[in-house]
Image 1 (cartoon, chains in turn green, purple, cyan, red):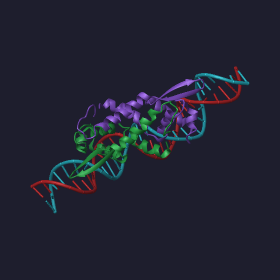
Image 2 (image 1 turned 180 degrees about the vertical axis):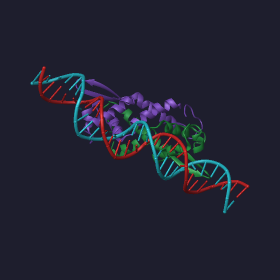
Image 3 (image 1 turned 45 degrees about the vertical axis):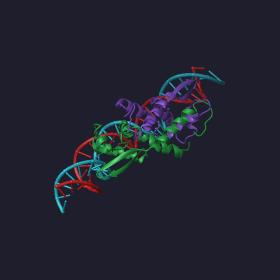
Image 4 (image 1 turned 180 degrees about the horizontal axis):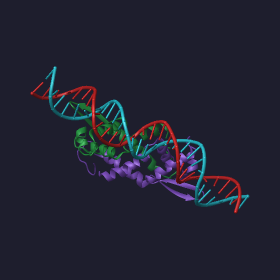
Length: 106
Length: 106
DNA sequence: AGAACACATAGACGATCGTCAATGGATTTG
DNA sequence: CAAATCCATTGACGATCGTCTATGTGTTCT
C-alpha cells in the first residue's frame, strides 16, 4: 500500500479510534431510519452537546458520516462506501496472512 | 454495543489510526513468511528505529500483532482473531444500514 | 420583528501522541 | 570474558486530542 493510501485509511480509522465516536457510528448505522440528529445521539451519552457535535464533525471530515440539514435539525448517516474501504483493507490483510502471495498490499 | 466493547475496539482502531502503523501492519501481513523482524520493517520507512519499535509496541498492546523472540531478533505476526473482531464490527454496521433491524449493535 | 429551538464554533485546559537522540538489556560470536 | 548485533526503554520536545463553558448561526413560530 502506498503512503497516500495509508494516510487516507489511517484518517478513517482514527475517526473510529475513540470510544464515543465508535458508539456514535454504531448508533447512526443501527437507527431504524438510517439517519439521526445530534440531539438524539447526545441523549445516549454523558458528555456535553458541543462535544458530540465535535465528534460528529470529525466523523464527517473523515468520510465516515454524511450530514444533511432539514429545518432546524441536522441528520447524519453512515457512508457505506467508506465502510467498504475499511473492510476491504482489513480483509486484504487477513487474506494474505503468511501465505506469501501479497495481491495488492503492502 | 456496550461501552466496554466500544473501548476495546476503539483501542484496536487507534492502533491502525497512524499511517506508519497501518503500513507496518500491512507489511507484516503481506510478508512471505508471515512474520518479520524490526530491522526489516524499519528499512521500509524513513523514521528512526526506536520510533518503529514504539509503533510495534502499540500494535502489540492493542492485540493487532504478536511477537516472539528468536536469538537476537524479534519476529512479529498479525493476529487474525483481532482482525476478525474489527472486520466483524464494521460488517455489522454495514449490514444494518437503515434497514431498521439492529441485530447486535448499537 | 422577536423569541425559541437545534446545532456549530471559539477558546482554554490537561492529557496523550509521534518523533528523536541517547542509553540500556539480551543474545550470539570471537 | 569481550565485542558485536538487534532491539527496547528513557526522557524530552512540539503537536494534537477530548472535553468543557460561553458565544454565535440558522431556522421556525408567534
